[in-house]
Length: 297
Image (tube, helix red, strand yellow):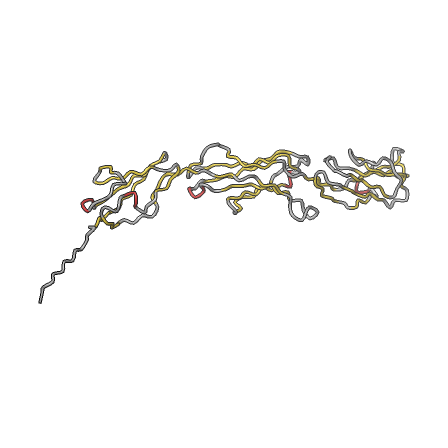
């Protein structure tokens, strides 16, 4: 046997990228004048011993990840007195897109604002994993790209993790991961990829009151505290309790002029509570009666 570098064989093409199950073909040729015979050794597409100068490895549906090799026997004796043989192999990349791509939380249950969490992207039966880049998205924004490290050429299961420091703004956000095979210049024009189903984040956070004025004037009998334009936000949804002069009141009770003063709301959920105060001025619902006296002339 001889080294591939000294072997008078030429592969055409020397490198191929093939999708799992697609056809594949490589010509092996020689210019050696002392060639006795040549052939392909492969689990699928092997040729047996053929006459030079060209022999073709041809497979209709390539599903075996064993790289084929072309060999040649020369009418030359080696140092042991045997017919000299050598072989070469083309660079064959057989790729397979994942069977499934899915996102899940490493620790199930809702996220809590300010806490570090991990999402996991599970990718099943992909090859070659060493050509795989996992791209993470929040909405349409790319937030992380993870290159998988692997020397295994056959299909395998791999995963990627995304670290998140949760914010209340992430509640309801859609996370996705995309497994993308980057196969180089001989690969497809558009990198083969599979994208997970969307994962909707549930973030729990302490309640708060959105922008609320510190002073409000309203007309008596037509206003109650539940009509105040100050929505309470939180997850889980908070309860709201109103207090006037340190006593809890019904937020749906219409206010009178005598009810003017400082009102305090306490908003609360399982993560905590907050409060804010507003000065309410209740104005008179006055009707001006105009009496006209007619004095006869």
